[in-house]
Length: 197
Image (cartoon, rainbow, N blue to C red):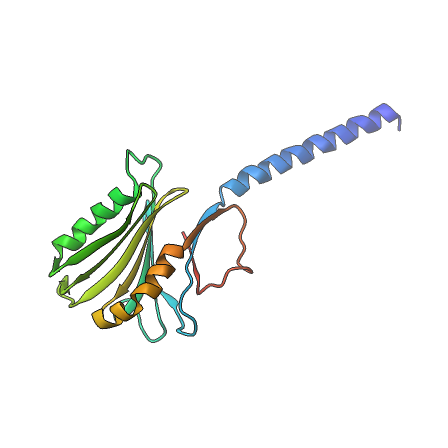
């Protein structure tokens, strides 16, 4: 075999390798995902009790051990809104739009804004009755994400317990991090502390 013939074969294999790597790289971008990591209180057995996927929204609900989606005292709910065209939306506007639903379905509502910027908004509220289900208090945060907005709700149906845990949960919700990655790192993340979008 002559040297020039050998070089042609090597070039052919190099081109195939480059094409395969390009296809692999493009394919990996399709597998990109977002993750929210929240530091739950230890030893309470927080677990996912509800998970719904819509066209542009994902909802997941977590409760402590012994509590379920329909029967809970405490809950953390995540909403991921994917939107390519923000049309002037920002975190504060998104949160205010969602809070209109709370206002319309609540009695005796007391609401306090804590943070209000274009990329991050945090409110807390308590109501005497929400949708005929009784008292409820909530810390809610909307944060801009790579693909739209993420809303995190800490909900407690016992106002006295909510007041006692308020500072702890406000810190947990405010410190929740959103990660955007092409590669899965399940071995690093504890399933009780993160939510994939």
